[in-house]
Image (cartoon, rainbow, N blue to C red):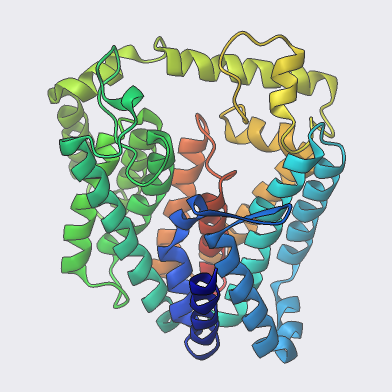
Length: 396
């Protein structure tokens, strides 16, 4: 604990004197939510401790500037509605203890991080360090996954590919889709940065790093992530190149996926493998529950209870694996509407000033949405922080 205390004190000094570097460290250390602590009855993670220190230092340093946050206008109301939906959903949850943990880690802390970013990232140059550190971290995580594919080091046995499934990497995460959910929108973001340019990121480094990240994304064998990234690539290329070249790029992506035996095997399964069938069953279970309570849903951490009450015969998971059902059943209609209102408000800022970094943020949201049609792209410690960081980019 002494080492932890000294480390947090050092981070506090960095947050005070070099706040953009502190932001970059948080983004680079997102997987540290897997490092867990227990202070009495209160569970926490290393990532959460870093966030709390950063928030406290930012508040103390910028207290006199808090009035500036009123300039966010309607976005403040949408965020307030989102937080209110979270509080209501925690109150009605059948598992109050788990719900309060989700409210804290996925809603309150990420939203406060967004406001701290608004006080910290004020101009495009302030993005340089955070983006470079996040990019470096994504590369290292990808390299760990690629090494894992070759050596099976720390790869859970069920992902070794000894059965009907192919070998799938997890890198520092617990399962392949966690890595895919992290990498797909980041690959889309940095690919947009590579195409549209900007002095914040070095193009040569971007090219090499993207190749590593895309290779790791491919080895997750997540079809939802593949689709999200492929669509993002085509959207990025469409306004810059003739339609024939974009079509050729689409054909090249499809050809690569079909040539590689493992990816061809994954694609051939379409919706008939256990993973896809489980997602369909989860969405149907969510639909049944929402028909009974379309306004409030089932409360935070309540979907597992829903499955148990319906005598669900498949694997009981925390979320329905669809971005609409995820928010609707967990946070009610208010949570669903306010979440998309936040995204629409941010996209409107892009429409006013489509700078390259805002275009990259827009593509990130596109990849998140597409992947979210078959997965859970927000309700996770790292993903919720990333989402609000990307939203903050629109307001620089």
